[in-house]
Image 1 (cartoon, one colour):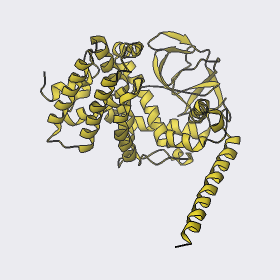
Image 2 (image 1 turned 30 degrees about the vertical axis):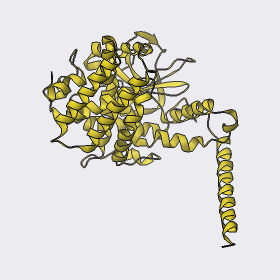
Image 3 (image 1 turned 90 degrees about the horizontal axis):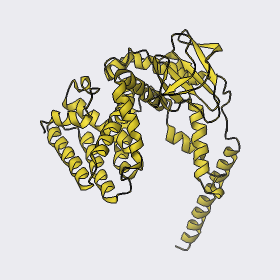
Image 4 (image 1 turned 90 degrees about the vertical axis):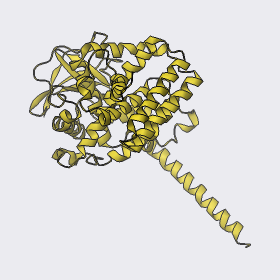
Length: 390
């Protein structure tokens, strides 16, 4: 028994030494943390492979996700800190891009990127002015709706920089940025699915431009939404937790009753918070815009992992590509995260509540997507119809 304190001391010292060693390794790793893209004036092999695989994936499964989306001509912009690259555009593009729905023209002349092509077409490039980029969303270039997303490399760099800026000074040299960023951004599969998210926004804009414009313009109402109301947040928790529970249970016989409970809970939440009519519409619009894009993101990933789909050979060059086999893990993470969004200040909760309603409609109302882009039709509108509500 007298040896026990020595054993405990040895374990404590070992753990302490391990922690110190890990901190030292993290600090050394941070010395080489990149602050800029390796070659910002070009797209590297891995980024081109991600983009090519996404175009291939959307054409293969896109129409199964949403009729017409897979066959639509939707070019893409990839950008970093200094340059924007336009891929899949059928001809010499006009100057810059148009922010939607604001209608603000930005950017300059598109030039041909020498030495690289994309699916046999020219890649266009232009330098970015400080503080001006196409953002992660959808824009218009000439007559075409175009998705826009940061390159994976620049996304990693920016996230590390953002985390560093938010940390106390003494932690900045020691924090394991590479590990944290890798865990948060995930695999190449997740990045390709994010490309699908932004491309679906372009599809929404192309297919329902007025509804798209109104839903994006509604974002200004976030200043008037009662995010700080603790009672409302608590009710949101109950609502999101119920959605996650219904999706996790996957019980077809109980589904109509469960959805009615969700709709009743939603109505009670709004009445309790005395939510104004325009803020109720704000919820519906953001669920339509971002929830459907999240749904398309996840459904594209899921279908990519089904038998019968073969990724491009170029994906062999990707550092962390799992052939979409990690979908079930991602889906579990989405369901676990859903209730946690109850106190998120911003429209992040609507990504989840909208996506969840779309998944429920898949189970309840075949053909619901044919009406989802109609004016005045929201996801909850269709759910009410699906369960025979008023």
